[in-house]
Structure formats: C-alpha cells, structure tokens
Image (cartoon, rainbow, N blue to C red; front, side, top):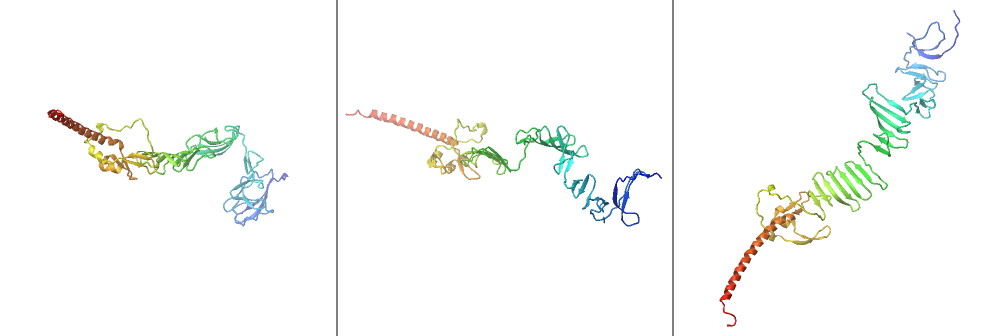
Length: 384
C-alpha cells in the first residue's frame, strides 16, 4: 500500500449515536488524499444531554432536542459556528468579545457598520419576494440630498422617496430638496397643537379648533366642536369682533352670541338699507290702523344698561301691544326686537288721517269765515 502523507485537515469532536448503542463521543481524523474518496454527508442524532462546555470540550458540536445545532466556545453552548454565531436573538461575529459586525468593511466601528460602493448612496433594503408587495429602503446619500439620509418605499417596482433629510438637517416630506427645517409637499393631518412662539405669528390646531394667533392680539378661530363657530377675537380687549355660527346660520359683529341672522352690537353706517317690498311677494293686503295706533305708542328717552349711552326710541313691549307684527322675539334669549323701519306704514296712514282732518277743519274755517263776513255786512257801520 502506498504510504499516505498524513496531513491533518481538521479534527471534530462529534456527539453521535450509533445504532442500538448508547451515545458516545467519537473523535474522527481525516487524511488527504484518501483512498476512500470524499465524505458527502454526516448525520448527527439529537442529544438532550451534551457534555458540559468547558476549556477541555471546546469545539464540541451537537444537535439539541429542537434540532438546533449547538457549538461549545469553551464557556457555553451557542447556536451556529463559523463566521456567525447565534445566541438567543442576537447574532455575533467570530470575534464575539467586541460584538461589532461589518458589512462591506473589515473594520466596523459600531455594533453594525454597513459600507457600500454605490456612487450615489448606500442602502438597507427590506424586500418581498413577489412583484406586488411593498419594498422599503433606508439610504445614506452622497448627493441628492447631499450627505443626506432618506427613506424610500412603495409597491415593488414603484418605490418612491418618502422622507429626506439633508446634510444640514432640513427634513422633507414629499420633496427631495427641503429648504426649511421641515418642508412638506402634500396634505398634513394633525391632532394636536402646532404653533410658533418667540414673538412670531402662531397657527394652532387643537382637536376641532383651528386658530391663527399673531402677536398683535387679533386672533382668528375656526371651532368645529362648539356649534361650528368661526370668529375673529380681540385678545387685548377680550371681545369678539366677528362671529359666524354655522348651526344657527347667524352672524355677529361685536357679539359672541348673535340672536338673529345679522346681529350688530354697535352703530351701523350705510348708504342705504333696502327692504323686500315687491307687491308680487305679498298677499292678503289690508289697510293699517294709523293714527289711533300711533297715538297709543309712547316715545321715550333712555340709557342703555351696558354702557350708559343715552338714546331715544320705543320699547318692544309697547309696540307689540299695538303692532305685534313689528316685534321679533328671540327663541333662545327671549329678547324682543322692534322693526323700526316698518313703523313707517302706520305713520303714513296717521299722516293721511291727520291731513284729512286738517282739510276738513280748513273747510269749516272757510265756511265760518264766510258766515262771519256776511254777518258783518248786515251790521250798521261803526259809530252810528
């Protein structure tokens, strides 16, 4: 037999279970070249009671009861061996004492260091096996954005950039070139406060309330929680300048709670006021009781309770007793309002009635004057 060169390639200590025999430790030494060819397979039976791992059993390999391969490193058993070793949920390199993994680099500086050779960027990709599922990438860019970072994702084959961070720290959503600390191209859905401080104008979105609050104290609010309200608020004077209530369709000026379709708490100046008065819009027309009704009204001097301002007018209760059509009562507050402009109708009739009386009296005066002249003619001259 030709003498073989005994070159030891590897020595493995393997826990094996021979047929119909107890488990034993077997030392196997291979030689090359071997007259018996190449080993194509090696079978290890599961072993629930491996030898203790120590310095004397380092290199022991066995298959545990869960069909997981375990390797003794001289201190304890762990899954796997070679370039990677698994311990629980963690993956370690061969040099487990540093626990630093490098992909694309032999000198990792962190627990995981990835170094790519692409001209534009290096990426970590999470991909599906089908063409219809989504893929995601985390990219470190050399340009676009320069020295930046981005997250890409979408359906396989149609991925698009979702978030971009430039080297200077600007963040872009929906844009690859953010020019501000945060640049967003598209809709924004917020559920909490968003405001500017430090003396700058502020935009706030809180629940159902949207407001713009500049330092000047003139705030604009859209409140969808309390009656769908829009208002402009004077923060310096703590008063509502303009209010719109969507649920009642009312507008208030200097009034936070308008009680009519257009409620102004103050003086109104206008070139003209127009009333709908087309006869084609009316039915059941009847004459108005003029003079007798007007005579029942009482004009008064008074002062307003809120600011002591002097004024003249009538009371709604007084008018309601004579002309109920000219008084409006608010269903919520119970306050009464007079249609002053419509008082012109009974005033017109009152003037007409007075004019008729005046004309009748003039006729009587003329007749009496004629009779007096006739009597004077029948009297003898004075001094006789």
